Image (cartoon, rainbow, N blue to C red; front, side, top):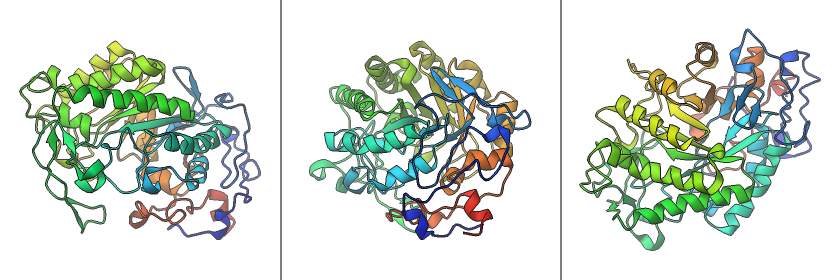
Length: 420
């Protein structure tokens, strides 16, 4: 069912009541209200969920200190509606729509500095104004009993001088330019400025940017941070040997290539504590021409190194996701990394309801992150529990700057069933 725009969703007074719609006991602790933020339990306190043995996605899970009521995670999704890199009030509704008591949400990728940007209208968290703008958004998620992590990133060479301070070149592990990339519409091209290779003196400053971003995320009220080490951005530009052509201590061997990402992890852990830190990795993907000759070895090296830091979770993208966020045939598996990692493991990439249920049942993941389906279905955990039909997503509005269209206007299940 294609989504439509509902004028009523523009108002915070429109209520959606889960309890009046159904009596399924497995869902009695999910409180989705489309346009009103209404706490049902104290923030961070997930009510005990009744397990639905037929659907492993709708079972409770303890992720460190956080009690989750289900396994369905909102994946970090770039939405490009943070004008001038400042989160906007319309994000309060967007995230609160997708929050549930005991549900984990990961916010869209958020820049750690003014050199971290590579797309229009993506949020940052390096200024006081940005931190203050995040606070009501975080509060709205907490008011619904949700757990909220900030994904902090630096795009590296996936940028051009228009997004950089004083029109300077973007930075990377290399000075090799990135070829023009096709936009999400499959037609237009994005051109990137050839990057400047970071010196060994520059790298500690970038590490410190991540540390300060993590501190700022705590100031904004987030429960933790996810370090973006995936999808061809700066950390991957160091990790992967098809990009990293350095000959110093940050290049060459696998240990050297992973040094910078692990320094970032160490700095963030030291700042906010390992129990509030996750990381996203995509060793098998080749986003933005960022591939590796031995992705399995890279993935295993990273998770074993991360075990030493004791971080809360590893969020890893399935090998079937190639370079354009579509499923491809692949014989690789995340299972070796899942088995090697000591913390909670989140799988992501191309999952539907059945795939997610199977991944949890077979112990291939503790949690499953959903992007496009959660974008189009703000009450996705409830729909999965009921095996209800899903709204179709509209790619054309993924990155539209409109504060409503394709953002907060996807209908909830009761609106569909009532013919709103």
